[in-house]
Image (cartoon, rainbow, N blue to C red):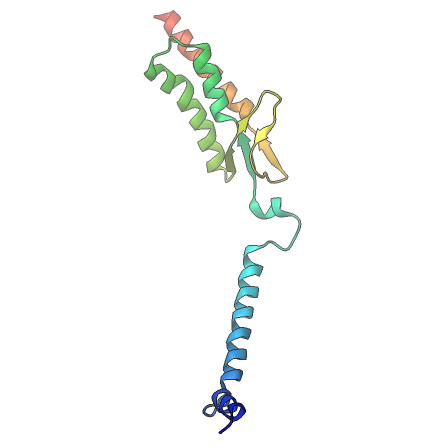
Length: 145
C-alpha cells in the first residue's frame, strides 16, 4: 500500500469522509462567528438612538470644589449638604431612564471620557445647583438657630 493510498484511506474513512466533516465544522464555526458578530456590532450609524438617553456629570469636580471652599464642614455636614444632593440628582436621572456617565472635567471644560453618545446632556450645572441649594438651606437653618 503506497503513501497516497494510506492518505486516501485516512481521508475517506467510513461512510462520511473526514474531509467533509472538517468542511462542515469549519462552515459551522464561520456561521457562528458571523451571527455573534452581527449581534454585538450595531449596523446603523445612529448609535445614540440605540443606546437611549445619556447625561454626563463632573460629580467629583463639584464635590471637590465645595469641599475645598468649605474646609470647616464636618463629615456629617459634607454628607448632607454635598453628597446627598448630588446623589439625588443622579438617582433622579437614572430613574428617568438616562444612562448617567460620571466623568472628569479639566480646567478648559474638556471631559475625560472615552466615548459619549451623540445626544448626551451635561447635568453638572444641576449638580452644582443642588449643592448650592443644600448649602443655602443649611446656612439658613443655622441662622435661625
